[in-house]
Image (cartoon, rainbow, N blue to C red):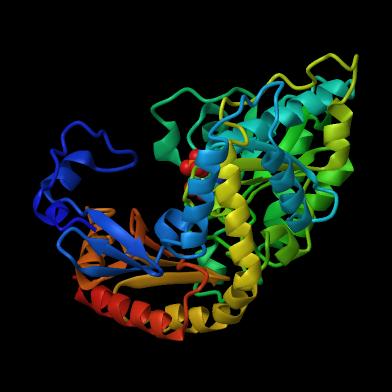
Length: 441
Ligand code: PLP
């Protein structure tokens, strides 16, 4: 790292930062200048333990030379190939590798550049599939309150976070299940809440209201992530699956966070033993080194669209950078790391240690709920009267100053350390966070 970067802070005004309180940030910036393994380095030379895998995405830890070398090699071999009507070998190789990780049957991959684009793509596949089957009247989507499916119009519409929706127009024909969080019955659940499978029955109510023949798909995060780490109640996802089957609705799991080992399995679908019709993924597919997303679709869905003359484009959708060669190279190197280092198994082994550590914070400050599954957890703070989000923000700043990166939404702290995390780092994480929580007034 160039030490000049520590003293030469750039002008911060031109970069309009996403999902950031720009004025607050620029008055008191937090800048990372390097990262290695489980640690970031700040511009003033401090190490900060990455308690969030960046943004739930650097699953294998930072600065992996194997990925850097694969990217470098690929840039010098084939930097880009047109993604429409032309191909390049590693796109096909990567699709085959991913198909081996997804649940049996979901073995057709459509590439995008982000989770948001993966969600838009899945929604469009659902519409196209029904139309190709002669059920083009199936145009409605069902999402869920507190869901995050990215920021594009489809994902925003099926999403359920009010701040992301209220300023914009949303798609018509979208309805929402209620969120599964039920603190009255399930506060401080370890793993899956035992109460609440019946929340899935709301889907029957929405189906009855709209008519099953009008609904294309239901989309849920198997474990809601950005909405506050909400593990599904025991039996909930199974029930959604059976209601979808009964009425011919496609079930989409948005696994942008839960994919690639977060729960100790390749995908949450495998962890729960519930197979959706499509999986959206992004983030961990390249260890966040290069942007990439994808949709894994059941073969029947793909084959249902392979109709008409051979010369016809079957699905009018795609991105200039779908299956970008450099992203594919990064993804292949990332999958090699997951496999070679058995990181999903390691995450599964660390999950109970992590669970014990985060639940150990229960008495350490204004904590009103703690939830966890795999290597993801959330801690809800009681909002300070008249100042919702103030405690959360203070926790973020104090943790950062004390050497720990956490993620905060309102007064909810989210934790999702990189999969190689070990017992010493989990102990550090809970020690630093415990002190921070106790410091909150
Ligand atoms: N879906 C889920 C479940 C996510 O958590 C996210 C991002 O956090 C997205 C979609 C959007 O992904 P991206 O920010 O890559 O567009």
